[in-house]
Image: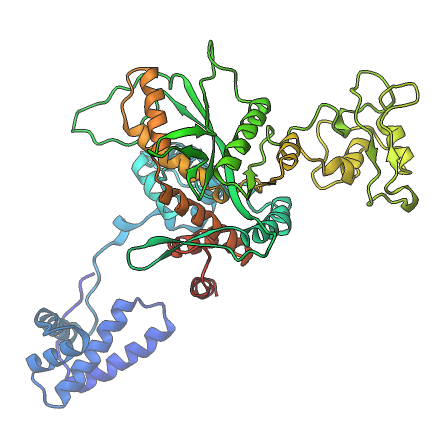
Length: 555
């Protein structure tokens, strides 16, 4: 309804009292900020008019207080507002928006139902099309909303954005699924990080200094008889012959046809270090004469797939190259926790490979020493044979009874798997948690320690702690940029890209991993650790200023 013009136009004294009353009522009612600002402007305008200001000077004075600059247009709008209020004794009716701007998403029940549906989908399965179908066929009809035409894909996309979903390009970074699992955090915080902190005291540090951001070498302070430690991070990666970049620029109407399949695989296993970048030996001309890298081409009629036997052979070669390249130094081999790296010997102690009773189709295992965590003190440190007097392999029951465990009524093994939180649900689980079974050194560790070097394993789901992961990304980015006509071209390009990464870039990758380790030592996790590492790009550790910034953000 349009407002009616008042027959008797009142003066500004009476109108100011009415404006004051409207402002008082606005504090009790849910009045929008725009209307409150209009009432404040009108009250100031009325006061200036009562003090003797003319209309134009009064509006200009208010405009200077409310607006940057002269505010000529704003002053004109103030006079229009004052004229409207004098004639109708009410604010102008807001005509913008209305029903045309109404959205069903404003309904809290619709929001809750939509969020519940989206949260029930696995990560990566949400799409605007799937969400639109669920809204039109399930969510809205259940809540009593029946639309004539239904929502479009575009509306579903807008709703996803409002609800917090974003179209994201998948990329490697901190692997959050399992990253903060209790057992993973326990190994990271109690074993891996303290050991790495001790090893770092014997390592060279490459620190970025000066305006030129040059990397400066800082030697460790070694006591007589101590040796410098050089970390070697190992990992494997695969390149496909038809592996290209995911995003390209095309003209309107232009289409790039891609060949079906990704073709053959190029498998690479390598080591990176801070001294030379990769574990190599150069001649006087800078050419690589010895290389610890192993490249094979598995598949049909190709090389065999990578296994722990090939890895052990590569480690032997890597140790030879390391000792030639870095005499009087100790190598710290760092591996991730893959099944190949954890391979045990053929006679290793495996509780789940044992039968309940003696003999049968079970392999013979090596003799062991009853560990110090055995509940019976007099049995600790005593040798326990894993075969009977007749030469048969012992079963779970006799092995546990000899250690004086009460296994009355306990089943041999759980099916299909043991509960994660239970350590004594079955005989196999109970025996596997004993120190002599649980803390066995892999073939990899035994080989490295036998040569006088060190070995440690990264926590699970912590690829950000391995600088070679960043090296793979650097190489693959350049590999995908090059067109490969044949598999021979792919092999040539792969070798060129793997050899092209500068040593300084690899050192920066190392510093990024060191910063992550320092962030975890300081108690940061997840997104906070990522933010702190990005904040301190030119450092090896997280500075106190970054920690203070994080405290300010989260407090």
